[in-house]
Image (cartoon, rainbow, N blue to C red):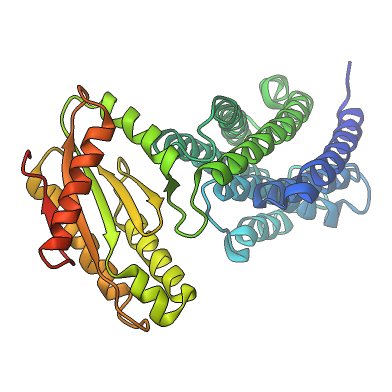
Length: 388
Protein backbone atom coordinates (compact mmCIF):
# COMPACT_ATOMS: atom_id res chain seq x y z
CA UNK A 1 0.00 0.00 0.00
CA UNK A 2 1.24 3.49 -0.88
CA UNK A 3 2.18 5.67 2.07
CA UNK A 4 1.96 9.50 2.22
CA UNK A 5 5.75 9.98 2.23
CA UNK A 6 6.25 7.93 -0.94
CA UNK A 7 3.40 9.70 -2.70
CA UNK A 8 4.70 13.13 -1.75
CA UNK A 9 8.12 12.31 -3.12
CA UNK A 10 6.49 11.03 -6.30
CA UNK A 11 4.34 14.15 -6.60
CA UNK A 12 7.35 16.42 -6.19
CA UNK A 13 9.13 14.50 -8.95
CA UNK A 14 6.07 14.64 -11.23
CA UNK A 15 5.58 18.39 -10.64
CA UNK A 16 9.25 19.10 -11.34
CA UNK A 17 9.15 17.04 -14.54
CA UNK A 18 5.96 18.73 -15.74
CA UNK A 19 7.47 22.12 -14.91
CA UNK A 20 10.41 21.43 -17.22
CA UNK A 21 8.06 20.26 -19.99
CA UNK A 22 5.68 23.19 -19.50
CA UNK A 23 8.37 25.84 -19.31
CA UNK A 24 10.56 24.63 -22.15
CA UNK A 25 7.89 23.12 -24.37
CA UNK A 26 5.23 25.82 -24.14
CA UNK A 27 6.26 28.99 -22.32
CA UNK A 28 9.64 29.52 -23.99
CA UNK A 29 8.03 29.04 -27.40
CA UNK A 30 4.99 31.27 -27.01
CA UNK A 31 5.50 33.37 -23.85
CA UNK A 32 1.79 33.07 -23.11
CA UNK A 33 0.50 34.30 -19.76
CA UNK A 34 -1.35 31.03 -19.28
CA UNK A 35 1.88 29.02 -19.57
CA UNK A 36 3.65 31.44 -17.23
CA UNK A 37 0.98 31.16 -14.54
CA UNK A 38 0.81 27.38 -14.88
CA UNK A 39 4.59 27.13 -14.57
CA UNK A 40 4.34 29.22 -11.39
CA UNK A 41 1.60 26.89 -10.10
CA UNK A 42 3.83 23.86 -10.68
CA UNK A 43 6.70 25.52 -8.82
CA UNK A 44 4.41 26.28 -5.88
CA UNK A 45 3.03 22.74 -5.81
CA UNK A 46 6.48 21.15 -5.96
CA UNK A 47 7.81 23.42 -3.19
CA UNK A 48 4.73 22.88 -1.02
CA UNK A 49 4.90 19.09 -1.33
CA UNK A 50 8.62 19.11 -0.56
CA UNK A 51 8.06 21.11 2.62
CA UNK A 52 5.44 18.64 3.85
CA UNK A 53 8.22 16.05 3.90
CA UNK A 54 9.51 17.83 7.03
CA UNK A 55 6.40 16.90 9.00
CA UNK A 56 7.43 15.36 12.32
CA UNK A 57 10.76 17.18 12.44
CA UNK A 58 11.84 20.32 14.28
CA UNK A 59 11.44 22.29 11.07
CA UNK A 60 7.70 21.61 11.12
CA UNK A 61 7.08 24.89 12.97
CA UNK A 62 8.07 26.81 9.85
CA UNK A 63 7.57 24.25 7.09
CA UNK A 64 3.82 23.70 7.67
CA UNK A 65 2.78 27.38 7.41
CA UNK A 66 4.94 27.92 4.36
CA UNK A 67 3.77 24.67 2.76
CA UNK A 68 0.12 25.60 3.28
CA UNK A 69 0.72 29.06 1.84
CA UNK A 70 2.50 27.62 -1.21
CA UNK A 71 -0.30 25.11 -1.75
CA UNK A 72 -2.83 27.94 -1.83
CA UNK A 73 -0.50 29.91 -4.09
CA UNK A 74 -0.58 27.00 -6.55
CA UNK A 75 -4.39 27.18 -6.61
CA UNK A 76 -4.24 30.98 -6.99
CA UNK A 77 -1.88 30.65 -9.96
CA UNK A 78 -4.29 28.13 -11.52
CA UNK A 79 -7.07 30.72 -11.17
CA UNK A 80 -4.83 33.42 -12.65
CA UNK A 81 -3.96 31.10 -15.55
CA UNK A 82 -7.66 30.56 -16.27
CA UNK A 83 -8.29 34.32 -16.10
CA UNK A 84 -5.48 34.92 -18.59
CA UNK A 85 -7.37 32.87 -21.17
CA UNK A 86 -10.09 35.52 -20.95
CA UNK A 87 -7.51 38.28 -21.42
CA UNK A 88 -7.71 39.23 -17.74
CA UNK A 89 -4.60 40.32 -15.86
CA UNK A 90 -4.17 39.35 -12.19
CA UNK A 91 -2.22 41.71 -9.94
CA UNK A 92 0.08 40.79 -7.09
CA UNK A 93 -2.47 41.85 -4.48
CA UNK A 94 -5.11 39.23 -5.40
CA UNK A 95 -2.35 36.66 -5.89
CA UNK A 96 -0.73 37.08 -2.47
CA UNK A 97 -3.66 37.81 -0.16
CA UNK A 98 -4.89 34.20 0.03
CA UNK A 99 -1.49 32.59 0.63
CA UNK A 100 -0.52 35.27 3.16
CA UNK A 101 -3.76 34.87 5.12
CA UNK A 102 -3.38 31.07 5.10
CA UNK A 103 0.18 31.26 6.40
CA UNK A 104 -0.84 33.65 9.18
CA UNK A 105 -3.75 31.46 10.31
CA UNK A 106 -1.53 28.37 10.24
CA UNK A 107 1.22 30.09 12.22
CA UNK A 108 -1.30 31.02 14.92
CA UNK A 109 -2.62 27.44 15.11
CA UNK A 110 0.29 25.59 16.78
CA UNK A 111 2.18 24.19 13.76
CA UNK A 112 4.92 22.97 16.13
CA UNK A 113 2.70 20.17 17.46
CA UNK A 114 0.04 19.82 14.77
CA UNK A 115 0.75 18.96 11.14
CA UNK A 116 -2.84 19.93 10.34
CA UNK A 117 -2.47 23.44 11.78
CA UNK A 118 -4.56 25.92 9.82
CA UNK A 119 -6.21 23.01 8.03
CA UNK A 120 -9.69 24.51 7.80
CA UNK A 121 -8.40 27.78 6.32
CA UNK A 122 -6.03 25.96 3.96
CA UNK A 123 -8.65 23.52 2.63
CA UNK A 124 -11.29 26.23 2.26
CA UNK A 125 -8.90 28.49 0.36
CA UNK A 126 -7.97 25.66 -1.99
CA UNK A 127 -11.64 24.92 -2.68
CA UNK A 128 -12.42 28.60 -3.30
CA UNK A 129 -9.55 29.28 -5.70
CA UNK A 130 -10.02 26.07 -7.67
CA UNK A 131 -13.72 26.95 -7.85
CA UNK A 132 -12.86 30.40 -9.19
CA UNK A 133 -10.60 28.78 -11.78
CA UNK A 134 -13.41 26.43 -12.87
CA UNK A 135 -15.78 29.39 -13.20
CA UNK A 136 -13.23 31.30 -15.26
CA UNK A 137 -12.81 28.31 -17.59
CA UNK A 138 -16.57 28.13 -18.04
CA UNK A 139 -16.61 31.80 -19.02
CA UNK A 140 -13.79 31.14 -21.50
CA UNK A 141 -15.83 28.43 -23.21
CA UNK A 142 -18.95 30.59 -23.39
CA UNK A 143 -17.17 33.69 -24.68
CA UNK A 144 -15.21 31.93 -27.39
CA UNK A 145 -18.07 29.70 -28.54
CA UNK A 146 -20.31 32.76 -28.97
CA UNK A 147 -17.71 34.92 -30.70
CA UNK A 148 -15.75 32.30 -32.72
CA UNK A 149 -12.73 33.37 -30.73
CA UNK A 150 -9.29 31.93 -30.15
CA UNK A 151 -10.55 28.88 -28.24
CA UNK A 152 -13.64 28.12 -30.31
CA UNK A 153 -12.16 25.31 -32.40
CA UNK A 154 -13.13 21.73 -31.56
CA UNK A 155 -9.74 20.91 -30.03
CA UNK A 156 -9.54 24.14 -28.01
CA UNK A 157 -13.12 23.79 -26.81
CA UNK A 158 -12.37 20.24 -25.72
CA UNK A 159 -9.24 21.41 -23.92
CA UNK A 160 -11.02 24.20 -22.04
CA UNK A 161 -13.79 21.77 -21.11
CA UNK A 162 -11.26 19.29 -19.70
CA UNK A 163 -9.45 22.04 -17.82
CA UNK A 164 -12.67 23.37 -16.33
CA UNK A 165 -13.83 19.90 -15.33
CA UNK A 166 -10.48 19.05 -13.74
CA UNK A 167 -10.18 22.16 -11.59
CA UNK A 168 -13.88 21.94 -10.78
CA UNK A 169 -13.36 18.41 -9.49
CA UNK A 170 -10.40 19.59 -7.38
CA UNK A 171 -12.58 22.35 -5.94
CA UNK A 172 -15.21 19.77 -4.98
CA UNK A 173 -12.59 17.50 -3.40
CA UNK A 174 -11.18 20.31 -1.27
CA UNK A 175 -14.65 21.50 -0.30
CA UNK A 176 -15.44 17.96 0.91
CA UNK A 177 -12.09 17.84 2.73
CA UNK A 178 -12.87 21.11 4.49
CA UNK A 179 -16.34 19.93 5.50
CA UNK A 180 -15.08 16.60 6.85
CA UNK A 181 -12.10 18.27 8.53
CA UNK A 182 -14.46 20.48 10.53
CA UNK A 183 -17.12 17.83 11.18
CA UNK A 184 -15.15 14.63 11.95
CA UNK A 185 -11.49 15.71 12.06
CA UNK A 186 -8.46 14.65 9.99
CA UNK A 187 -7.80 11.53 12.07
CA UNK A 188 -11.20 9.97 11.43
CA UNK A 189 -11.33 6.90 9.20
CA UNK A 190 -13.96 8.54 7.00
CA UNK A 191 -11.66 11.48 6.34
CA UNK A 192 -8.62 9.31 5.61
CA UNK A 193 -10.57 6.95 3.35
CA UNK A 194 -12.32 9.58 1.25
CA UNK A 195 -10.08 12.64 1.24
CA UNK A 196 -6.97 11.75 3.18
CA UNK A 197 -3.43 12.47 2.07
CA UNK A 198 -3.09 9.33 -0.05
CA UNK A 199 -6.22 9.62 -2.27
CA UNK A 200 -5.89 13.40 -2.66
CA UNK A 201 -2.20 13.22 -3.58
CA UNK A 202 -3.02 10.65 -6.26
CA UNK A 203 -5.80 12.92 -7.55
CA UNK A 204 -3.43 15.88 -7.63
CA UNK A 205 -0.81 13.95 -9.59
CA UNK A 206 -3.44 13.00 -12.19
CA UNK A 207 -4.73 16.58 -12.32
CA UNK A 208 -1.23 18.01 -12.82
CA UNK A 209 -0.61 15.68 -15.75
CA UNK A 210 -4.00 16.36 -17.32
CA UNK A 211 -3.72 20.14 -17.06
CA UNK A 212 -0.14 20.25 -18.36
CA UNK A 213 -0.84 18.18 -21.45
CA UNK A 214 -4.15 19.93 -22.07
CA UNK A 215 -2.23 23.20 -21.96
CA UNK A 216 -0.09 21.87 -24.81
CA UNK A 217 -3.28 21.30 -26.83
CA UNK A 218 -4.41 24.85 -26.09
CA UNK A 219 -1.04 26.14 -27.22
CA UNK A 220 -1.42 24.28 -30.51
CA UNK A 221 -4.90 25.75 -30.95
CA UNK A 222 -3.46 29.23 -30.35
CA UNK A 223 -0.83 28.69 -33.07
CA UNK A 224 -3.47 27.57 -35.56
CA UNK A 225 -5.72 30.51 -34.67
CA UNK A 226 -2.88 33.00 -35.08
CA UNK A 227 -2.05 31.59 -38.51
CA UNK A 228 -5.70 31.81 -39.51
CA UNK A 229 -5.83 35.43 -38.33
CA UNK A 230 -2.83 36.33 -40.44
CA UNK A 231 -4.54 34.81 -43.46
CA UNK A 232 -7.98 36.35 -42.85
CA UNK A 233 -7.42 39.71 -41.09
CA UNK A 234 -6.49 43.06 -42.57
CA UNK A 235 -3.36 44.02 -40.64
CA UNK A 236 -3.99 47.79 -40.67
CA UNK A 237 -7.63 47.93 -39.56
CA UNK A 238 -7.77 44.53 -37.79
CA UNK A 239 -11.04 43.77 -39.59
CA UNK A 240 -11.70 40.70 -41.74
CA UNK A 241 -10.28 40.82 -45.25
CA UNK A 242 -12.67 40.73 -48.22
CA UNK A 243 -12.73 36.97 -48.75
CA UNK A 244 -13.25 36.16 -45.07
CA UNK A 245 -15.93 38.80 -44.60
CA UNK A 246 -17.89 37.52 -47.60
CA UNK A 247 -17.57 33.92 -46.37
CA UNK A 248 -18.70 34.72 -42.83
CA UNK A 249 -21.41 37.16 -43.87
CA UNK A 250 -22.93 34.71 -46.36
CA UNK A 251 -23.04 32.04 -43.66
CA UNK A 252 -24.55 34.45 -41.11
CA UNK A 253 -27.26 35.62 -43.55
CA UNK A 254 -28.12 32.02 -44.46
CA UNK A 255 -28.58 31.15 -40.78
CA UNK A 256 -31.02 34.00 -40.05
CA UNK A 257 -34.74 33.69 -40.61
CA UNK A 258 -35.11 37.40 -41.27
CA UNK A 259 -33.47 40.14 -43.30
CA UNK A 260 -29.96 41.28 -42.38
CA UNK A 261 -28.53 44.76 -42.85
CA UNK A 262 -25.49 44.97 -45.15
CA UNK A 263 -23.49 48.21 -45.20
CA UNK A 264 -20.87 49.43 -47.66
CA UNK A 265 -18.81 52.38 -46.38
CA UNK A 266 -16.24 54.42 -48.30
CA UNK A 267 -13.95 57.13 -46.89
CA UNK A 268 -14.55 60.44 -48.66
CA UNK A 269 -11.81 62.19 -50.68
CA UNK A 270 -9.30 59.52 -49.62
CA UNK A 271 -7.00 60.03 -52.61
CA UNK A 272 -6.89 63.77 -51.92
CA UNK A 273 -6.02 63.03 -48.29
CA UNK A 274 -3.10 60.84 -49.38
CA UNK A 275 -1.91 63.39 -51.94
CA UNK A 276 -2.08 66.33 -49.55
CA UNK A 277 -0.80 64.76 -46.34
CA UNK A 278 0.96 61.56 -47.40
CA UNK A 279 0.17 57.87 -47.14
CA UNK A 280 0.84 57.88 -43.40
CA UNK A 281 -2.17 60.18 -42.95
CA UNK A 282 -4.23 57.83 -45.10
CA UNK A 283 -3.17 54.87 -42.97
CA UNK A 284 -4.14 56.75 -39.82
CA UNK A 285 -7.57 57.46 -41.28
CA UNK A 286 -8.05 53.80 -42.20
CA UNK A 287 -6.89 52.59 -38.79
CA UNK A 288 -9.19 55.10 -37.06
CA UNK A 289 -12.17 53.86 -39.05
CA UNK A 290 -11.29 50.27 -38.20
CA UNK A 291 -11.18 51.19 -34.51
CA UNK A 292 -14.54 52.98 -34.74
CA UNK A 293 -16.09 49.96 -36.46
CA UNK A 294 -14.75 47.52 -33.87
CA UNK A 295 -16.16 49.72 -31.10
CA UNK A 296 -19.56 49.90 -32.83
CA UNK A 297 -19.92 46.20 -33.59
CA UNK A 298 -22.35 44.12 -31.60
CA UNK A 299 -21.63 40.47 -30.72
CA UNK A 300 -23.54 39.21 -33.78
CA UNK A 301 -22.17 41.77 -36.25
CA UNK A 302 -19.32 41.47 -38.74
CA UNK A 303 -17.03 43.93 -40.51
CA UNK A 304 -14.37 43.68 -43.20
CA UNK A 305 -12.17 45.80 -45.42
CA UNK A 306 -13.14 45.17 -49.03
CA UNK A 307 -10.05 46.92 -50.34
CA UNK A 308 -8.51 50.39 -50.41
CA UNK A 309 -10.77 52.75 -48.47
CA UNK A 310 -13.92 50.63 -48.89
CA UNK A 311 -15.46 48.60 -46.06
CA UNK A 312 -18.44 46.32 -45.50
CA UNK A 313 -20.45 45.60 -42.38
CA UNK A 314 -23.13 43.10 -41.45
CA UNK A 315 -25.50 44.39 -38.77
CA UNK A 316 -27.74 41.73 -37.29
CA UNK A 317 -31.04 43.59 -37.57
CA UNK A 318 -33.97 43.62 -39.99
CA UNK A 319 -35.21 47.02 -38.83
CA UNK A 320 -34.44 49.92 -41.17
CA UNK A 321 -34.49 52.53 -38.41
CA UNK A 322 -32.14 50.55 -36.18
CA UNK A 323 -29.70 49.92 -39.02
CA UNK A 324 -29.69 53.59 -40.07
CA UNK A 325 -29.23 54.78 -36.47
CA UNK A 326 -26.29 52.48 -35.85
CA UNK A 327 -24.54 53.46 -39.07
CA UNK A 328 -25.14 57.15 -38.35
CA UNK A 329 -23.63 56.66 -34.90
CA UNK A 330 -20.58 54.98 -36.49
CA UNK A 331 -20.21 57.84 -38.98
CA UNK A 332 -20.31 60.46 -36.24
CA UNK A 333 -17.93 58.52 -34.00
CA UNK A 334 -15.41 58.28 -36.83
CA UNK A 335 -15.62 62.04 -37.46
CA UNK A 336 -15.02 62.79 -33.78
CA UNK A 337 -12.15 60.29 -33.57
CA UNK A 338 -10.30 61.93 -36.48
CA UNK A 339 -10.99 65.56 -35.56
CA UNK A 340 -7.40 66.10 -34.37
CA UNK A 341 -5.76 64.78 -37.56
CA UNK A 342 -4.25 66.86 -40.38
CA UNK A 343 -7.51 66.64 -42.29
CA UNK A 344 -10.85 65.44 -40.91
CA UNK A 345 -12.00 62.65 -43.22
CA UNK A 346 -15.64 61.70 -43.53
CA UNK A 347 -17.39 58.53 -44.67
CA UNK A 348 -20.30 57.79 -46.98
CA UNK A 349 -22.41 54.71 -46.26
CA UNK A 350 -24.99 52.68 -48.15
CA UNK A 351 -27.35 50.23 -46.47
CA UNK A 352 -29.20 47.33 -48.07
CA UNK A 353 -30.94 44.26 -46.65
CA UNK A 354 -29.92 40.72 -47.50
CA UNK A 355 -32.18 37.70 -47.58
CA UNK A 356 -31.19 34.06 -47.20
CA UNK A 357 -32.93 33.45 -50.53
CA UNK A 358 -30.47 35.54 -52.57
CA UNK A 359 -26.69 35.58 -53.04
CA UNK A 360 -24.87 37.95 -50.68
CA UNK A 361 -23.25 39.59 -53.71
CA UNK A 362 -26.61 41.07 -54.72
CA UNK A 363 -27.09 42.76 -51.35
CA UNK A 364 -23.51 44.06 -51.50
CA UNK A 365 -24.21 45.52 -54.95
CA UNK A 366 -27.33 47.29 -53.70
CA UNK A 367 -25.46 48.64 -50.65
CA UNK A 368 -22.64 49.79 -52.95
CA UNK A 369 -25.13 51.60 -55.17
CA UNK A 370 -26.66 53.29 -52.11
CA UNK A 371 -23.17 54.33 -51.00
CA UNK A 372 -22.50 55.99 -54.39
CA UNK A 373 -25.84 57.77 -54.08
CA UNK A 374 -24.60 59.15 -50.74
CA UNK A 375 -21.50 60.39 -52.56
CA UNK A 376 -23.62 62.13 -55.20
CA UNK A 377 -25.81 63.76 -52.57
CA UNK A 378 -22.82 65.44 -50.94
CA UNK A 379 -20.93 62.71 -49.05
CA UNK A 380 -20.68 62.26 -45.26
CA UNK A 381 -24.12 60.68 -45.00
CA UNK A 382 -26.05 57.42 -44.90
CA UNK A 383 -28.39 56.30 -47.68
CA UNK A 384 -30.67 53.27 -47.38
CA UNK A 385 -31.38 51.21 -50.51
CA UNK A 386 -34.86 52.01 -51.83
CA UNK A 387 -35.79 48.31 -51.88
CA UNK A 388 -35.69 48.37 -48.04
